[in-house]
Length: 475
Image 1 (cartoon, rainbow, N blue to C red):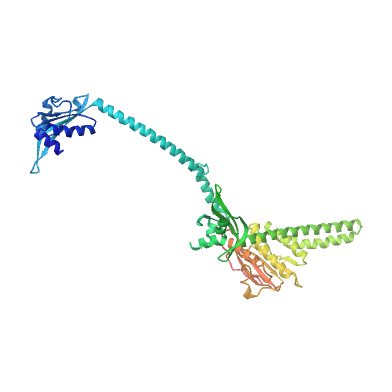
Image 2: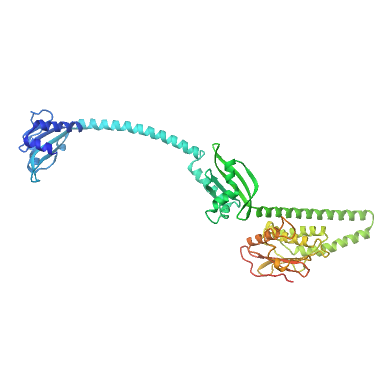
């Protein structure tokens, strides 16, 4: 400090005392001694007239060489540092004018350190208490937000949720109170082709109305970009506060397909029940003839029924797929009720297939039902069925004696909603072709020699392989 150096140079004790005392107040009141370049005592903090606490030779190295000294190792009771004092000269030089000794008693330092540690400890304890309280409150708030679940449970629930959303066929869509999409699964995303479609989709499904009116909607029909949808909607609440709305939906065609399949299964059950009733009646007839001792008539009746059975059962037994057998048997009963002559061609044979009965019911059942409808009002009521798996593909051919399908109309009958039978029809062959695509199969339509249509179902023998050949009706 220039002021200290100047005061030492002119030995101005009063000026020096004022500066040093002010500094000592800021640095824990150390013992300070100042000497000039002749090692004469200029200032001492204990007594201005007292001699330095250290011998003159202690300052020798500092006065002679201008070096700093640390004498702490020489005295276990105190820590002492000696430093030179330089005065700035007019020619920007420096000259040594004295030395200053600063000494701290170790007891004073330890007391000061202990005091600082004590105050630091109090601050630390208060900080820990505040921090602990904050952590407890924050943890409680987090647990409320996470419904009391631990992070591992949250991660597990999140994984399950993602797996569920990806696996369900239904589209699932949720929006928040600001009408922004917060959840959309892959099935719902199939409807979206551009980002701007998101707002249109939420509006089309009616999610905006659900947020405004807070109402529940079940099994209502909606339309988006020409797709008919069946939607279920409901508002979402957190702590009784509205936070958004969620919707699950399916294509109406899927619902229609499921309904048709259920109707077909019910129809097959009714057909089998009718056959059971018919055979029971025939047994009553045989029993009555035997009780009346009309043995010849009973034998003739049994022989007539045996001829029909012998013609039908061997052909059915060559169809080894149990599901197809059940469909054919039920269709035979349905056709017999309407006096329709349905035959399985002699050359038909089929090994068990990889197609589940639910899918085969849609494909084969729809085509046979169409054939039955096509001939039920005709004079000639004939349906022929041919099946084979010779080669790389499964070929199933159904032909009828109905009015047939015009060539320019054959590509239209597989379109959704197209039908000549009235409104709310036209899903049969559409569902057949849609199911065939799932199994890499194809559908062929041609004219039959019976006078009507010939519909061919072509499926690959091996699961996952494409159909290998283009097949047309043999006639």
